[in-house]
Length: 417
Image 1 (cartoon, one colour):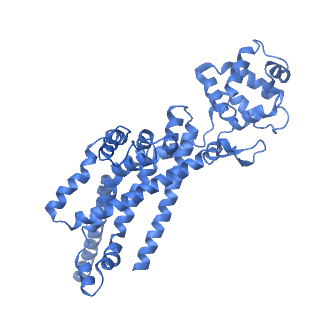
Image 2: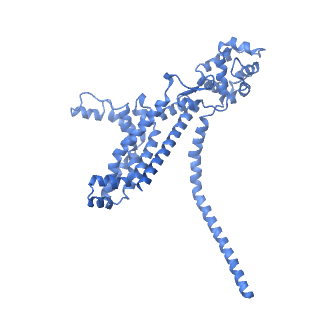
Image 3: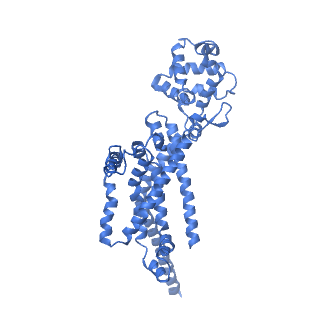
């Protein structure tokens, strides 16, 4: 009996040891998998998540006045917005205006307040030159004497709006809206409405490029998938050839080809098809041609990878059962390529949404997309808030369209299954 109990105890000890070793092996396996994935996670956090988070934060950031004039920002936040602010607010403003020249603070405040009123920076500079050296006893009287604008309620309301740490001004401006003096959201003046039409133009151009790439890429991908391997590989080199050339070079080459005295107009006139050169560049036609040429491989490759795995026996079986060849192609072959069509159209559309160089060089003034204005506010006016708001809104539009598209594709696949 003791021997039996001893054997049972030994088996239990052995079983616990094996379980412990198994847990250690599984833990070690997870650690190795995490170590392999960790560099990619860090890379995504640094080059994707962090920049997008910064962009979203900058689109609502309103810290310029608070950082340069903290006392003014704190004092004016309690003002009701009616009449003129108290003597304490004006005294703090006058004192901090004198010290704001240090470190470029006056430039930051002037640039921010210029978004509220284009003449605000000039007002600050004029006032700074006229400020008395000694503190005044009644700034409510002195400041309006220096410039009548300080006696207007709207001037101080603009400062109060700029004193808040966050603002929705840039997001509202990105959809052609603004807040009135009472705080209500209203459309901007008709002559200032720009961005909704820009977003509409961006979606139209991206959609047109995607449709053209699909119409051109589908038959070409089908040809590559059905040809013998040697011939298909040779033709695939020509599909991949544009990747070996700079985007800027490819765009500039289309300007050379499409311009008034270019190769295409010269050839058409030489053949007698036209009497005078056509306007093929610096318009929507040139933008579509150049963008389709650049993005077409991104449509062909996903389609080709899916079509290559489709067996031709399904289509032949449908034809042998009496189905018309075109009907067999449309009802049997095409549904199997939906995943490739979805991947290609989504890839091309998202890439086309953010295009900047090609429309800027080949397009006209009415063909510039959202990315052009993002670059303008970033490089020319240094209005990072507006640039971030436009970029964030474009990101939101892209995500919404992706979710809608993904849901429609899933519903179609479920309906077919």
